[in-house]
Length: 43
Image (cartoon, rainbow, N blue to C red; front, side):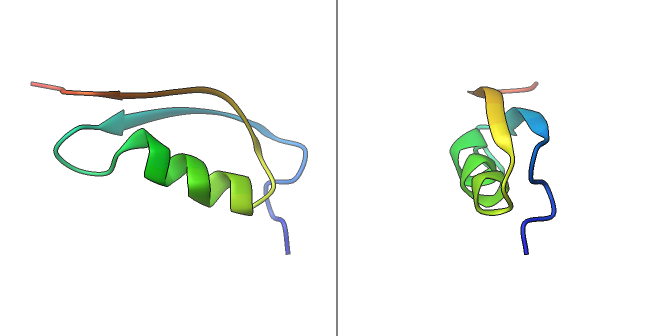
């Protein structure tokens, strides 16, 4: 089941928590198109 099929997603990951690349893998598996992905340190 691809619940995000046809959706576009912007991903903002956090360096000390969940990285953007991990979130990207999940949303790609759910069928979304990743248009932006970054991992930053939010202080």
